[in-house]
Image (cartoon, rainbow, N blue to C red; front, top):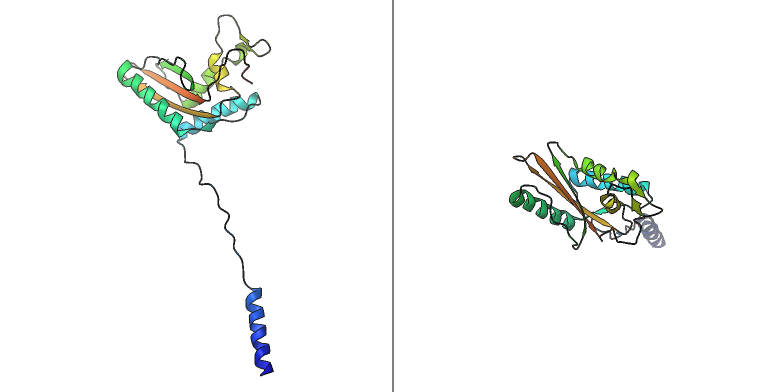
Length: 176
């Protein structure tokens, strides 16, 4: 009888030694996939921001939807004219181009071309130049980005609009 108890004890020891405990760590769901255009808008913005030491922007589906509604309205109702972006809930940049294809990267690179005219020390822009769209691209407090484009084939124009949350270009504050 002692041999039987010994065998049972050995069998239990082998079973308990091979038990594996698996723990499941809850994770957040992955962010929704973004389009190639959204990625290009975001990557080009974040490249410019990295050059001045500003944290990257995150893509916002809700800002993208708002920009998309506005560019579609401008295309369908206003023949791709510039949109009225007077102080609103978000910061905004837009680009209107006639007769050429405008990729998301090209739109952002066009705004960033204002950088050489911007004087950080005095927070001013060179005479006969504007720097507002560049400053919005690199505004340190903006965290989210959403952009959209519309093409008016009859007018051969492309309208690009990006929204930023929170908005930038606050008078009296430097962008970075």
